[in-house]
Length: 255
Image (cartoon, rainbow, N blue to C red; front, side):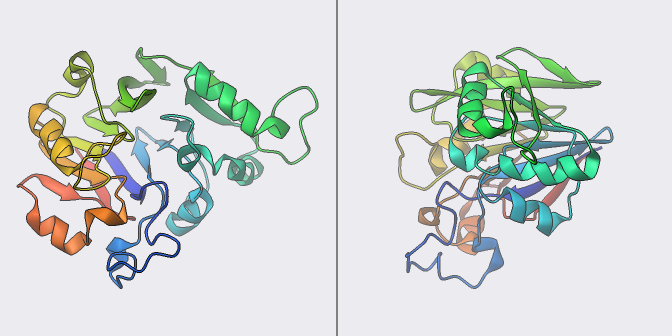
């Protein structure tokens, strides 16, 4: 069995967005409060996190997570990497580094952003991150097979991930057909849908639904949602069968 917990389902600005007075940002429904997008997967006695954005600390405290076996990074934008300093608390508890899986370009960005955590004279108390370079080829964490899925965030190459019968896609607005073939017939597809209107670097609602139908996903959950996509309760009612709106704290299981 594979269990997924949505740590966050919001876009880069989060919801509510600072200074916004729209009905979504002022909503009292907790499902309209969206931290930056991330999930944690429990599978084969491993806890695998996908992305550690700027709400990482808050998310782990909320879900009472005190250890991780690996972090998969989709790309280098700060809403997906900005919380990595807080792995130092996990280092302290577990007495070991955290395995980070990412592309070479992303690793270079992390080494620049967290320069105090790398190099010959590592700063005392800095996070301990053990980086493993991946590309668009399958790799393994012990006996767990992970298949990267290449897509594009406007012109930026981004990786999604397929683990067992789950596919996680975020911050994309284009996926080549050969990569879509990797995620056909998933039990669960999680995909970004930033708003209803077209967006230059993210799937809009119509495009996300189209990908779900094209790949024949049995269930689809929308994530990386901005305030522009509307209230959770209204959006959920408007979607086709098998398409759902994810929300922070949602847990789903795949047998």
